[in-house]
Amino acid sequence: MEAEINQTKITLACGDITAETTDAIVNAANERLAGGAGVDGAIHRAGGPAIMAQCRKIGGCPTGQAVITTGGNLQAKYVIHTVGPIYRGGTRNEAILLQSAYRESLKLALRHNLQSISFPAISTGVYGYPIDEAAHLALKTCIEFAEENTGIKLMRHILFDQRTYDIFSGEFKKLLF
Ligand code: ADP
Image 1 (cartoon, protein in one colour):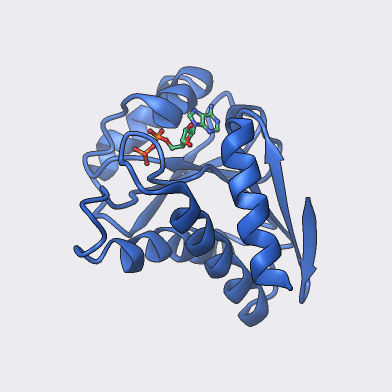
Image 2 (cartoon, rainbow, N blue to C red):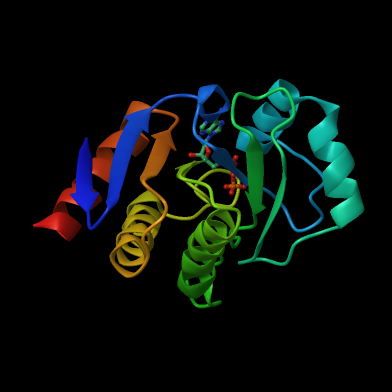
């Protein structure tokens, strides 16, 4: 499903983020930018060693922040690595940090004059964030950013399985209507 907010199209789709053709794809990284399982591993496998070489030079990224590297062999020109919070019950600033991960990624894209960006469902895998809450925060942050900024024309949310897609769709409808 998709919706137009101000001058930005926000789209939800089921799929593999490494196949995206947007200007940037977002990686759900860890603070050491060390690579790992899940979407992080998939991006490094598909993008090749140039991405990790730049990650090593950058050295790390605090939770809630974002950094940018080449897209290597990916179709996307850039990878924006952001670090979502590990979910520990919801009382450790998780919501603020998850919103920050999305917002800082969008700010970085804007600063690099990128027009399109694809996000995975940050923190909802190994980091354990409840998907409905994460979906609400992810989409709310993107909608608010689109209302306040022009320049990014397309924000895609690439959900890896049907269940995650359905939860994101439900939360998107609630925010729109
Ligand atoms: P985190 O550590 O932030 O929780 P994970 O990679 O474990 O990150 O999971 C984040 C989300 O990314 C999960 O919903 C997972 O199913 C999804 N995911 C895993 N591989 C891919 C992929 N290739 N493309 C898109 N999403 C993916």
